[in-house]
Length: 300
Length: 282
Image (cartoon, rainbow over the protein chains, first blue to last red):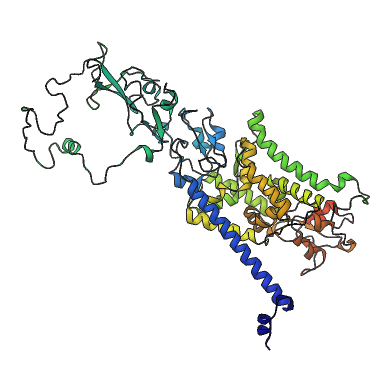
């Protein structure tokens, strides 16, 4: 009988020491490899599940996109240490933010937008991008006035606090003048966020006087939609070209609104067009680009 | 086996605990230097073991973390690369796993578990193959490459514990308690000696280290087994002490953490700390 046959036939205690050692070795290697792969897989799955940034966690200025940030940030906390306002904190195990990474909660402590951006300078890996040298160019998130039912300005009051505290006042947040249909004689001054200037610092959310903020900062991806790449805005093209790209359009009459052009909303007041009456007698004429906005010329 | 047979020793307690005390002092001093900043405003070391700054000037960084960021597809800024190079050079010189026994805060947890396991005479459980850590290291790097993010840093107990201590977080407490009880009840020296991929990485670094332990007076060995009992990586002793596969008395395995505990416990004073070119047997 050959040794191989013998091993296969008999129980392990009769196997030769060499084959026993070999079997033990193969078993242990298999267990190690299996255990190693399983643990790595588990860590990977946990990381995938935990890598979605919660809506109310804001990354420091200059942070790379979330996926790139999670590749670059070594979770050393040097940005946290160099933040002079105690804004930044490190996520703990079990928090919804990736373990050990820096973030801030705008409603607790917003970013004070230091001009020298010490957190970015402190980052040893470049997870906070050193190409960011002008803090007004940072895009930590985007503020959105999410609750128009409870915002005091939407109710017709002159709260304006979010507008007043905005470090990029009159660019990131403007007050847009609207007719107040409820009283029919007052104005609404609606805080309006502009994505081209908002840094996401969160001072508006922090200062909102309501028990639950009506204006909140979100990751840009959450707060912002996107037009399809091929869309063109006719009025912009017209302004650029000096004429409509598709030629002059036929003006069709609308029943009941003779004398006006087609396409206007039936609810829009066309009989007596609103001429923006200045709120203050010597208020400046609104800039032509942002008709209806009020520029207080107040600077922080 | 109970605690090392120290009752019959004619060496003083201080001599018998010398390396252990030095090691604890090193571990606690590093923690204290990190904590002096947030506690007392004295910023000697800022950051944590992942990356730090000495006196706001010299950068340090964990070479394994730098490697992980590169594998994940991010080329670190020169600050982190400089820091990683400094640490790499240091550990290549003194032995990679010096990190494990002289720096890593988890070592105090697992040493406590190993001590209690010896004291209580617990023999239960089964330790996984000590190559598991190498597979885990490979798995970590593979998972990092595939996912493109630092997956291991979500759960890495080494950086988690240190960060928790420095930044006052508590979320990792259960994980660390888990490691303690795993080492105590299930696997002797299970975490540091068999599973930890960070230790595996530093073990690979330690293969060429200059600083080494030598069983120089191995002729005086009386087979009391104290060193084997106390050593966190007992497999590294045999080749040097019993001349298995080598003739010189140097412990050259990368797994040896240069903790010096064998020097402490040996009443025959077989072991000594020396360099890798010192092949003398006394």
